[in-house]
Amino acid sequence: MAKIAARRGSDLTGKVDDFDWSVEAAVLERYGRGARAREAGLCCPTSYDPACLEKLPREILEKDYGCGDPSRHVGEGERVLDLGSGAGKVCYILAQKVGPKGSVTGADFNDEMLAVARKYQAEMARKLGHANTRFVKARIQDLALDLERVDLWLDANPVSSSSGLHALEAECNRLRREEPLIADETIDVVVSNCVLNLVAPRDRLHLFQEIHRVLRRGGRAVISDIVCDREPEPAIRKDPELWSGCIAGAFREEALLEMFEEAGFHGIEILERSERPWKVVEGVDFRSLTVRAYKGKEGPCIDDGQAVIYRGPWKEVRDDDGHVFVRGRRAPVCRKTHDILTNPAGPYAGEVLPVGPLPGPQDATGQCGSGCC
Image 1 (cartoon, one colour):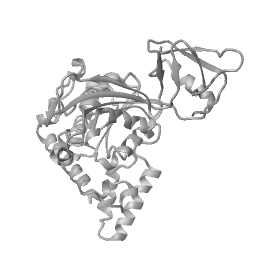
Image 2 (cartoon, one colour):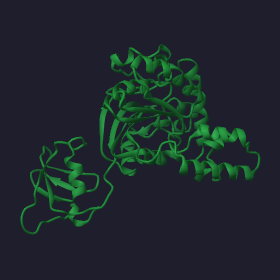
Image 3 (cartoon, helix red, strand yellow):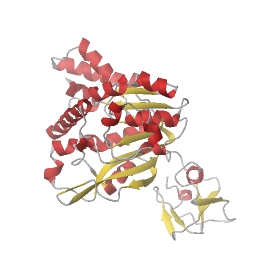
Image 4 (tube, rainbow, N blue to C red):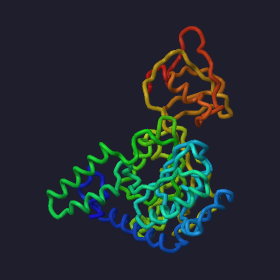
C-alpha cells in the first residue's frame, strides 16, 4: 500500500508506468541501505564550510550523499526547505546559517533516513542554542501531501477493495486541500543536493511546479544536481540501479535550466559547474551543477512610464519574457519588469540603470509597453 499512498490524487487511478515504479523502489531500497551503512558510490566529492561541520554528529557526516553545497547561498533569517534531506547534513548546516530567526524544513520519503536526521534534533538544538529544524515525510514532487498522515490513515483504514482505494484517494486530496504539508508561498529558499535526478520521469514537471508553488514571490531555488553533457543510451536511462546511483536520471545540462524556465522561474543562472566530470559512462560526462532561479515574474503588465538602460558589456541581451535590451539604449518597461530588473536583492542587480522615459512617442516594440506580459 505504500506505493498507492505515495501517488498524487490525480494519478491514483491512472495507468502506472512499471519503470517509474521500479525507479522509486530502487531509490528507496538503496537509500535505505545508505541510512544503515555508508554507500560511497552515492556521492561525489563536495566541500562544505568546516566551521559548520564541527558540531555535526559523525553518523550524519558519514551518511551524507550529495554533489554540491547549496547552503552557501542562504542567509540569516530565511525560511528554507531542503528537498530530499536524507540524514540531515545540509539541514543542520542551514540551521546555523539562518540562525534562530530562520527555519529549516527537511523533506524526504525514506523512513530510515528520516529516523537518522530526527535522532539528532535535540542534540543539535543544544549545540546551536536554538531549535529551528523539522523533518517531514513527503515525496518532493508532492509537497502538499503529508505521507505520515497518510500512513496513520492507512493503519486505521486498510485498503482491500476499490471502494477503499476511492476513500484513500479522497483522503489524500482532502489533506492536500485542507492541511497541506508545505503551504503555498511559505518558503524563502528551496534547496536540494543531488536529489532531483532521482525523481521518476512522469513527475518531473510537477516537481518544478511544486518548487514554484511553495516559494514566496521573490523567493528562489538553489539546486545542486548531477547533469550530463549529452543524452545517454536508452539502456542507461532504463537501468534502475544506475538511476538510484544518480546516473541514469541525470538531466541534460541545458534541460535542467529549461525545466525551471518552463515552470515560470526567471533569473536562472549557473552558480557552479564542476570542471571535471564525476563519472564518465559510455562516453557521457556526468558532473555536478548548481543552479539558482527566482520566482516572481507573474502579474499584470501595467505601463506607468518606467524605463531602464542596459549597462553592458554585451551588445544586447534578452530576458526570459522576450524583452531585448540594447546596450546604452533606453527601453520602456512596465512597473513589474522595472521592479524585477532593479531589485538590489534580485538576479539582475546592477545590470541596468533605472531611468525615466524620453518625452514624446516611444518605440516599445518587444517591450512591456506592447503588452507582451
